[in-house]
Length: 605
Image 1 (tube, one colour):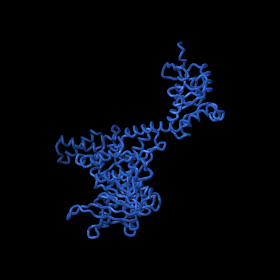
Image 2: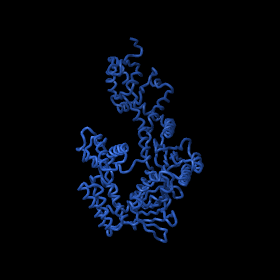
Image 3: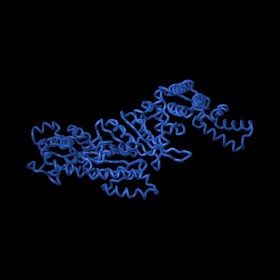
Image 4: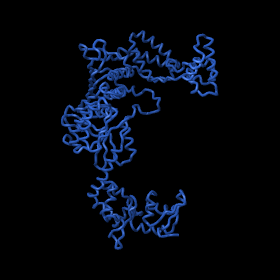
């Protein structure tokens, strides 16, 4: 974007339509080339910014269009790295002082304080006396102090490097910046796109930046996927929100490049401009791909990155939520931007996230920026979606709604309270989350997912217990099954769970149901013992247990016992549990496991 004061516009159609003044290679290529060359030469000479500004003023005078030149230079400045000349003079500083302790701000503060003590320096002699006193105190050379006192001012910064670009790329970047700057004062932006890949890429940006949007399709398919599909997206402008208008405006501006990359697009915006005659007035701004000037160029991604980050865009609260959720390792898969849900009236709803596990789906919609009208439209969509009557891919939609409560100011809370109450009545208990500072809390969501997990375990156990137990008996009792288990005689329950696509807790429950309340009793053998032993997420055949017991009689340290159990392929994390099941206690003599020993429960020595 470029500063508002450098924006050039034209008013058409009896003062109702606004058109920005774009640049073209035919008309403006010479000016853009001249400015790029001026920056290149200044970088080669390591000039101060003040000298560069003087050169630009000469070009500006010859051009006769100060707004255009300053707008272009504003973009070129973003491709420059300006540094303080303090580094160049570091060798002149006293070795007993660190550079940060003698920067320009410190020098000015010392000079002002010393001047206040001695009253104003109304003569050259008194000024020199004050400067010498401060120079001695800071242990800086007297002549150097005069240079450093204003060293950090903008015009005294030195142009260290300039990232060059082609004049045509700069023209494209300038035209793009003009559109972005114009949209900073819009009340609403409406754009249309054609092609599934195009709209998916743009809508990903809409949701990533938390913009308030409303989508409709020009036909009513259940799923928008064809390359011939066309959607119209209406995005609320910065002037329609109450707080954080600058942040929102920047987010809206970041959306524009992806719109321009589409094969077929058009946009319309309503721009508010001040005038001395009528005050604020709303103008109509329209632009289509066929009538647009050159604006498509990758140059806006090539600005020098001095932050050390590889990401061009700032992270959004959606990305923050996804990262936190994955770190919780709940077992649920989190997917961004699931398939859109198209309602019967052509409107489209795309939840921010889909949480899925074993066929269960829970959606999450994060409402960042919002207005009362936007919230009303969102609730109307949710009414249709939650009822399950308007869509096929979400018959019984289970959805969380997270709303940024920083907008619930006292002046508008009474107006929005009815909408929030209606939303609460539509959602299940605890499915409405109010968050702040861009951080969606996970507690309510994770608690609900755990409840679903418990219900799922029981439901799947009812469906698959018989099959799971038959499979266990086959692996334990038949020769073919034993061959599959292998020499170790260990059946990982994870393999059984994966075979039936169920949680491992379902396999545990199925085994418990074979002999309720006692995993170690069955009628499989005449003596009432199990053909296997359940230890953590493993089943161990009885014959291997007998071999293991015989081997453990020959060892008495935990270290040797671990070596014996390792042969079964059981992770050390479960070794203590296995020893306990076999009737052994672990005697610790310190924190070092190598010093621990094992003894049978009935061994009192």
